[in-house]
Amino acid sequence: MDKWQSPIAPGVSWYQATVGERPTYPALDESKTVDVAIVGGGYTGLQAAYNLARSGISTTLIEAYRLGDGASGRNGGQMGTGQRWWPEEFEKELGYERSKALFDMAEHAKRHLLDFADVHGIDMDYMPGQMNVAHKPGHEREYRANAEIAAERYAYPHISFMEARETAERLGTGDYYCGVRDTGTGHIHPLKLLIGLARVAKAAGAQIHEMTKARAIRRASGKIMVDTPSGTLTADRVLIATNAYVGELEPVTSAHIMPIGSFIAATEPLDDFPTVIPGGEAVADSRFVVRYFRKSRDNRLLFGGREVYSSRDPKDTAQAIRQQIIATYPSLKNIAITHAWGGNVGITMPRQPFVREVMPGVTSIGGYSGHGVMLSNYCGKLYADMISGNATELDQLAALDVPAFPGGRHMRTPLLFLALTWFALRDRL
Image 1 (cartoon, rainbow, N blue to C red):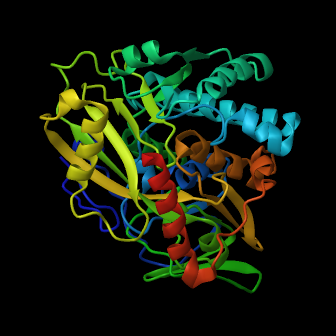
Image 2: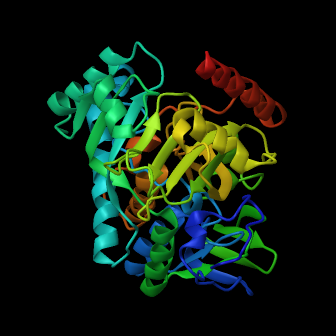
């Protein structure tokens, strides 16, 4: 077992415990000049590095800590379908044509991820199926319409409406009122994907350096400089792919992407509880503070929720998640929690990705808002397509209206805390 304890994310995840010793990559120890420098070693950065390197573009990626310490290696593993909003919500905002293009883009992202893993022999524990379920009454019309609209207007026939009885049978709990089941997507072991992706990127010729923190990004003599403690990367282009961990590195990104704490616990195998999600689908509910859960390939319940809106980590992650598990599955009140972990997820005001050239030659991509397993991988590829001069769907995300969080540098965190706490209280009413 890999005993590394991330300095930026509490707990050792079940994912980390099941991959053995992770490969390590050396820290940067000298200054380099490359075509493209990438800051951030998650899905976006690694996909960009792989696709750039295989196109013959010299690429160096730096990661402040270990690959997988951020959300890419510690997330809930759910792929989803479409964007963060349902397509009918996008239609009201953007019209059908743009909404359909964004939906199709997400389907391309799904196909790209599955094909990528298959071609490169990455066993990411893919399991099919996902359910979105309503935690309050009154959502039936909305959920029925979602299934109908997906089939009739978006050529996606894989979503079906579930009434209360079917929802209870498929989840193994009567805690939800209705839902939709999506057989055209699934869930994965995120750290296995990340480890495989790094391996493939390195084999393609990308230079990867862990434990190398970017201190500043600046322009000089027509080039872009990325300063680190042990050397400077000089590049024609830079990709900022730090998502929730941008900190003070780049002010435009940090004004648009905010970190919120997301926490997950893994139970012992549920061999004595066959009625809990018998079909093996992933589940996400309708709370603003989403509860998301699924079973692993070895039959554990992985249960996540977001309850911390500040930089402080909860004192007892396992107990906090246990209470949510028991509220959903009272029969699991005595089940053992074997692993509990957390980390930051990057969100934006409208819960849509932030894609922007934040200074000449410097592109920032992040803010997937809990919907990044597919999109972050695909955005990395699309960035590489853009640099290579190929047509790209990245422009569709760049055209979205993603405003900065209100309050400026000093007030945006407390304002976000107040807003999210209010919505969390509404979930309980």
